[in-house]
Image (tube, rainbow, N blue to C red; front, side, top):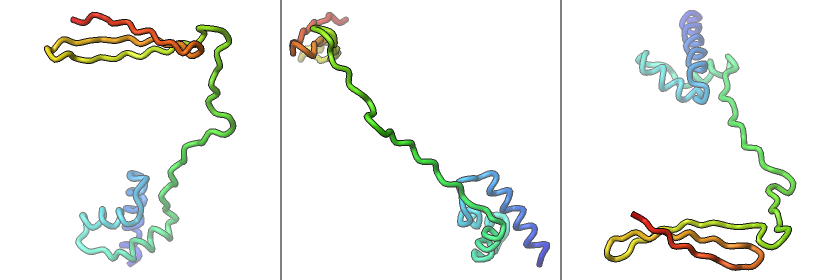
Length: 116
């Protein structure tokens, strides 16, 4: 019985090296494709005895503090924003618009660009 357990233990180690994010349930499913019948509880016990574990997913680091600080305009016309928009007329011609705006003056300039 020990030799069969040793064979299963080595297969479990190979499995956990190849598929790091899979646990004992997937290992049981994977091993039953090769061997006709393996007890689920036995695989779970061997997995636990060998100390095999699925590594935790690392969480994204959250930003602490102020994060993105918005810069304020120091003088008139210091910050500009651009927006490009397209539209189509009923006869199929394409219209292109370039919207330029300033933050301080709250003005918007619209340039109509010609399209081919």
